[in-house]
Length: 137
Ligand code: TYD
Image: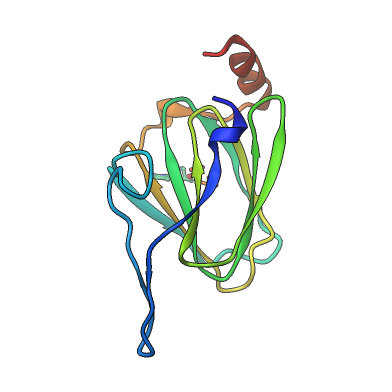
């Protein structure tokens, strides 16, 4: 899938002086059904995460707290997204190499995913990813 499918999506925000509320519904606000939720936290300064692609997984990444960058690469083009608000998220389509870096201290990265965890869905070798992306697999 081309990188143009990956985009920042603004989520509903119910504003209240007592605190704001944001929600995400299956296939309404994001283009897939959610089967798994995970989060990355306590990230030491200077850490880089990701460095892999998924064959079939759709993901939606939200900076629940703090900020970080997601660098996406479809094998031809690369795009850097800065996430720093809880009511925005980044939709990441399958076959997209991703690197996450520039984590602020105390940041929390929430990921909504279309499938349960499967190591078979990962491509962790960049050369293998490039070859697969070229074939359109
Ligand atoms: P990984 O997806 O490589 O993390 P990141 O992209 O944030 O660097 O996952 C790190 C480890 O956690 C890896 O051994 C697989 C395991 N893991 C699970 O067991 N279940 C999950 O849902 C996820 C996302 C990872």
